[in-house]
Length: 128
Image (cartoon, rainbow, N blue to C red; front, side, top):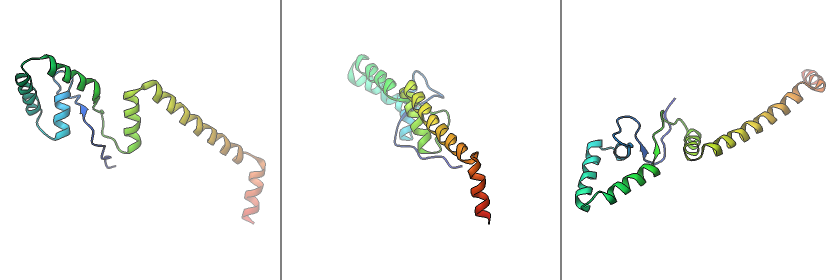
C-alpha cells in the first residue's frame, strides 16, 4: 500500500529531537539537516542580541506545531483523524462515536431486512 502524500505541514520531530523537536521538524519539512536549522537558530539568538525573543518564538512554534505521526498516513482520512485527535481528543472521540452509531443503525436496518421472513420469499420469487 502506498503512502498518502500529506499536506505541506511541519511537525515536531519525535526521533532525534534535542528539546521539543522544533528544529528537527523544520529541518524535515524543508529537507535540510537538523544541524543547519539549529545553527540558524543560534545565529538568530546572536543577531537579536538576547534570548528572550528567540526562546519565545521557539516555544510558540513548539506549541503550534503538532508532533510527528508515528507512522506515515495512507490516506486523507487518517491525516484528518490524527490532526483532530492531536487538536482535541474529546471532540475526536465524539466524532468516532457518532460515526459508529450511524454504522450500527445501518447494520441494524440491513439485519432487519435480511432476517425478515418476507426476504426469503422475495429471494425465492427472484429465483423462479
